Image (tube, rainbow, N blue to C red; front, side, top):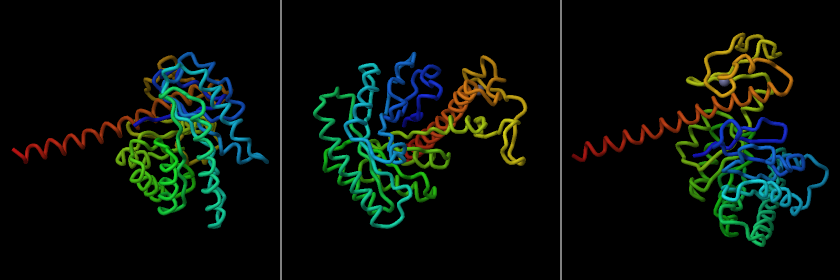
Length: 310
Ligand SMILES: [Zn+2]
């Protein structure tokens, strides 16, 4: 299971510190040319369509324009990079009536169909594949959306619009989608919580993405792991009861190995970027520990089964 870091043009370049780091980039105009600045190009990349950005605009851009931005980002990558390209989806955010929701799902499926055709006309290498976006507000609509995408010919899927749902419900939806398309073909968009991470490891989804290391850094927060903890910088305006940090703790991330005081400097942005690298290191370590634990648990089960067999 892979952790894709959500990246935008003004963020730290995570691959320059962690060469293996998978990256998710949205195809919005400001991100065009962004990969040119990477010293280490991403070896695994999801090119999202930036629908959350475009939905805020008065008019949606033509599908071809978004696809062109995706292609230009793709051109800046190494040829052997494993890439998933995501079609435009109509987010379910702020859609409350049943008919509004149904229309959004239909719209997304229509886009998926059109995108699949455009994508296949391009004859891209086999390492580049389109990703269908599964949407839904309950189990039946998730199932409907997933089966429609399978019929179109999609083999890689992402599940989105989970931002504002309760954690248990989010996990149920992911499980339902995984049952239909197979967990190893499923990516989960925009994950922040550790409980969701654990559940996704149990389900065995292929990957997820998060911008949490950058978001937290921008809000003057620093992460540490083993156990996972969040602190505010002492200058932060967060509630006085929030745990604050005057001095950095022991950390072996590439930033702290150089000078750990840097992560506690609130601004300018260069320090926020260093803080996001440090935060990524700890969220990644927490995620790897969850993975490792799961592996150990299943090995334990297997060895117990073998022992009983003898
Ligand atoms: Zn650090």
